[in-house]
Length: 397
Ligand SMILES: *Cc1c(COP(=O)(O)O)cnc(C)c1O
Image 1 (tube, protein in one colour):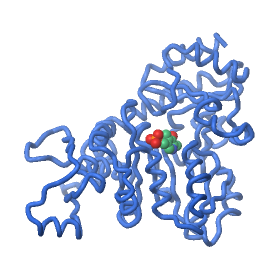
Image 2 (cartoon, protein in one colour; image 1 turned 135 degrees about the vertical axis):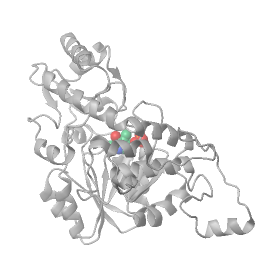
Image 3 (spheres, helix red, strand yellow; image 1 turned 30 degrees about the vertical axis):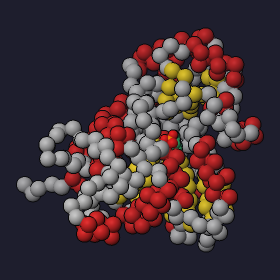
Image 4 (cartoon, protein in one colour; image 1 turned 120 degrees about the vertical axis):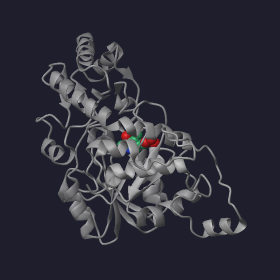
């Protein structure tokens, strides 16, 4: 039998082993190399390393660190990306992916339905530095076609939007963007790295908040930018190492442990999400049950093509508006009220008054964020217990 390299391994094997570096002690669990600097054997070695650091040579933790490098290689392997740069949070990754490649006068096209902080970067920060940004309805391909121009440098989108779970047809948008030479940057949190095939489907750059499913246990903030070796090393790395968004080695270690169980956790969460969505669909107290895994979802066919499953988040709209939504949240006993997602614990959020409260009522209406809308992130609890909890809380409405 010919020897296999890590590139031939299946997902679960890669998630446990890829990128592993062992010290002279041969430890089984990845070591946390909690150091800011590295000692050189000679002045000449220091000089040579500053000139060009080899793949396993480190200079300063803001530039790179062995534990962080293990995380970068493992998540890049999972996504099928050539390389990656880890950051202190998901937002640092989103900002680095854009700010590292854009300059004044550039044009960007972005889907309008975005995580609030992503919208802030595109609408408030980049424009202040002379970048022009056009927003489109991400599911309307004609709007993408009309918005891209010869000077469009990047298109930005969340593959599945937050919180209304629209699924954007990635190959179609990538084709439109590539026709004008634009870089396709995908914030892929809601698709999860387990179900994502973003690079295969046309994304040039994939960004994750590792705070979500990758940690999956509510402990740390982290992020990563994934792309070609050229983009990561020549564009993102110089920007990131000099502006200081580095991930802590301790965080990288927590996330490495998260990656080991990621596939198992996300598949279990997605299966439970489908069960819960089916159990709630048709309930008269809910005016909408939005889940891409349901046949009733407008983008179900796109989701089936590009996601394998419907994801781990469900959006529900209470027929009784905000009063009903608040009563529903307050009556839940297992599902907790918070704003993370992808966690082992099921979490419910009322976007209009929390994550999207910064937007005007008109902006919220345009995005489908009605007063009765709640976002439910499915955790690792027993599906029957969750359904009982949700039904009981609906009774209280
Ligand atoms: C949470 C989230 C982010 C930001 O990640 P942080 O780790 O909180 O900085 C960005 N995009 C999406 C889609 C998210 O859900």
